[in-house]
Image (cartoon, rainbow over all chains, first blue to last red):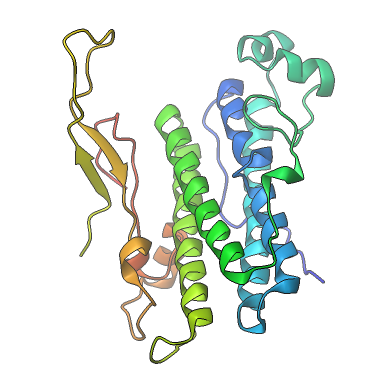
Length: 189
Length: 73
């Protein structure tokens, strides 16, 4: 069960109507290494992972939904007042034809989200290594979007999200150490 | 303390079609080096931690585009 707090994890401000940037940001919404894929991956793997690390997957999976909500807010704000003509120029003509300005779980190239993006192998080490890789790939995606964006407010929020990927990767690496067990003392934070 | 960005000089041919990038960079965030987080690390003050996205200076990884001039996180 979840409790919902009606606020974003980090404030999202947007400086200009910029549908082109929205098209890139969609990669983190419905892309292979996006926040939806991350949330679904972790919350699903929880059931078949040793007890010691279930809580970590629950916490991080939940936080990914908070990130998803931030990305959704950015995309919405970047496109809500754009004209169909502006959307067409930004490469979102095909999106507009199908969805108007509705958000859709797709990547920057317009491919719809698919669960083949994520794996649940049932082997705890294999699953955690996938999770570490997913965090590093999401971190890299944020970097490439920041490199293309000149919206200082968006970049501020994207840097926050990138930092969270770094922290999550750290925690998954520690989860692997916990499961390896043989390293001296274990400490929980 | 580890550095967040590394660089290398890729080979550039005189016949390359684009002006060569003489330096390429990649990011090496602190989670690669920390290992199991030791107890008692220094913390950011609460408001700064909320802003930065981490409580721990040891895990803070500032980022800005390597293609732009500003070096700020």
